[in-house]
Amino acid sequence: MSDKNTKNEKMEAIVSLAKRRGFIYQGSEVYGGLSGTWDYGPLGVSLKRNIMSLWWKMFVEDREDMYGVDAAILMNQKVWKASGHVDTFTDPLITCGNCQSRYRADHIITDKEDYKIELENFFSRSKDIVTGLHLSESPFDYSEEQINSLVGIFGEARVPAHESVKQLEEYLDNHHKLASSYLGIFPRIYLSNKKTMCAKCGQCEWQDAQTFNMMFTTTIGPSSMNVLDKQIFYDIDKGTKKVTEVTVSQENIDNTDNTVYLRPETAQGIFTNYRNVVDSFYPDLPFGLAQQGKAFRNEISPRDFIFRAREFEQMEIEYFIDPANWEAEFNNWVSLVHAWADALGLPAENVHELEVPEADRAHYSKRTIDFEFDFPIGREELLGLAYRGSFDLDNIQREAGKNMAYVVKGTNTKFIPHVIEPSFGVERALMAVLSAAYTEDEVNGEKRVYLKLPEHLAPVKYAVSPLLKNKPELVAKAREVYAILKKKHGNVMWDDNGNIGKRYRRQDEIGTPYCVVVDFDSLEDNSVTIRERDTTEQKRVVISDL
Ligand code: GAP
Image 1 (cartoon, rainbow, N blue to C red):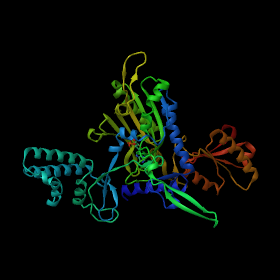
Image 2 (image 1 turned 90 degrees about the vertical axis):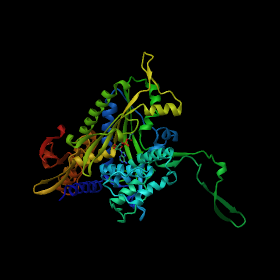
Image 3 (image 1 turned 120 degrees about the vertical axis):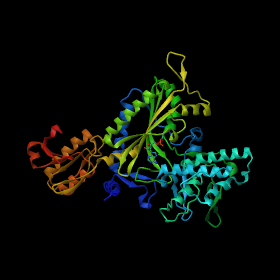
Image 4 (image 1 turned 180 degrees about the vertical axis):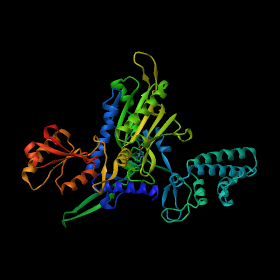
């Protein structure tokens, strides 16, 4: 079997276990589901909270230089205009002309290098035609019609006057820049030449790729909607009641643009509170603000279980620094990110640093590292670390007219701090944890599936059972043990379903590190059997030593 199939099988096994055992369900499943949304069951919510609490402890509580915030999800629309999200938080959308299925252009164009080469060829040839120069050599045979579709755009300007040629070149260069991010006509031409078929209808009839803003919008208050109201008329003589729906006049409603966005990142809720925290606490630089919470992105093609969802959670830190120290601070965060991966129990050899090249970085970023993980679906982004300079605080200072400068204590030195931003996705961390923990082995000649979860993340730490559930004296003693452990650890499960073998398998599948069994000897010697998940070894322990 190919490696790819094995990996897909592993992913399917994890998804199926997650559903069967109460970790994660499809969102709105009972109504046929809602794509890109997921609901967490009792064990999933527990695992997710353990991950988030671990992060909060590691990056906020255990440090002196970090401050937590919890900003509102709905923010003034000016936030997203100033941050650039309204104009540029877009994905390239390409539509099948036959069945209207929609895809992210950069997802269905899988060979990025080849795409870049062909794009260069196409534009240099088109430019040659437009400017009347010789055709450059290209291994890719573009049809005349394809070239004309671009050239045609500039038809009117095709006069040999110097100015026009210059304008044309500029126009083409801009078009080129757009297409290099998978927009415009070239993705269509490329997919057609490569005979890439629509996954849904099998046809090759692509339309031009367009930008698609990924922010969800809603409106605040009753403006810009057709407000329906009900008026009830009573006819006193006849004793009847008539309900009429009337549209409330728009004239009486505030008609300002009340669009608001569901936040696509938690980061902006941190930047907008920078001044507040500085004024309340006056921390020394460097210091960080941390936030955990929901983020929403209208992903064109949510996929791969919880990996790319439309509603997800982020854990973000904006670490404010003196720009003179940015390199040392950045490198320190690289180490901290690896320490985080280690705390999640992810094998170091499966965590990789991808140095994002300048051309692919956001314009304000001097350095970005994507930390990738070997998921069963392949090597993909787990989290990002970016040096954002003073981009966001500058924007706020300019657009809100508020002073964002930091005054170094006891001096007259002031400047707008720069920012290192480690941005963690909760679902990706959770999926990495499940992928690393999912293990198959053989016990007594039988296949066994278990989650080798680190103890501090396991949703259930101990499962307590009486050896036989129809023996009241065993049940009573086991209840005593359960109460002791529950008080101490909280996440303890009572499990008396089926025989002991079945209980062990079930607890293995949800990653419970220890199963405690109370038997007849326990009544005599006050000890219990503890069975360890990974080794399946069993030993006797005195109850007071648990
Ligand atoms: N403030 C920077 C920022 O939001 P990002 O790379 O767009 O950067 C950060 O997102 C992290 O959020 C990603 O590395 C990933 O872990 C998570 N993330 C982003 N989009 C996601 C999605 N659609 N579904 C699940 N997690 C997502």
